Image (cartoon, rainbow, N blue to C red; front, side, top):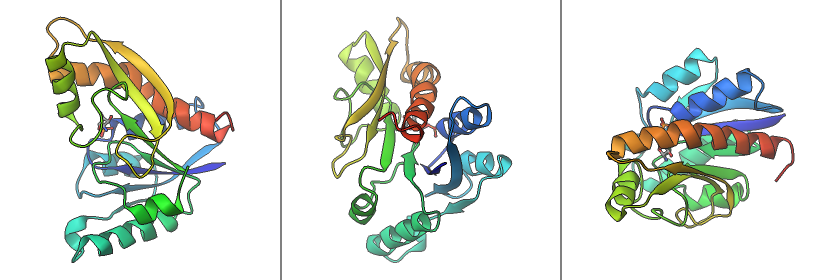
Length: 197
Ligand code: GRF
């Protein structure tokens, strides 16, 4: 069994897609052993609770400085002894001490076709605003391994999604989630759990 910890910051629809696909058997050999949020009171934590998954908050504001927060995040991760860490809408830069310890064991979902619209400053709606501003006709999502850079690690899966006339950033964001993110993130976990990568 692949022991997975999911890191979240907000709504957690990607977390929900993973939970659902583990429960319905689309994702096999996988157990979600924990969910960690950097924010209190977010819907992700409710989703974890409802699915009976252990969950914790590690919030920067609870620590005197970044180094202490980083250590607390690493300790929270270590407490689950995970085989894989999944960043599912986690809006915190992963500390170097975590990347060093879990090298090759951290994956992220990014809502564009990397290398377009990625890197520093490209998160949330900003990604889709930039895609629409550039006038691309196709966007999509990417699952990749996390390395020390921002969105620079090896790509695991990508899925393209059409941009349609009249799209707003919100509409495009939703279509990319439904058609790409909620599909390829669980799929990547299943591939890792079954040694297909
Ligand atoms: C997703 O668009 C993900 O690609 C991005 O943040 C969003 C998180 O959404 N990195 P949710 O919390 O999974 O609903």
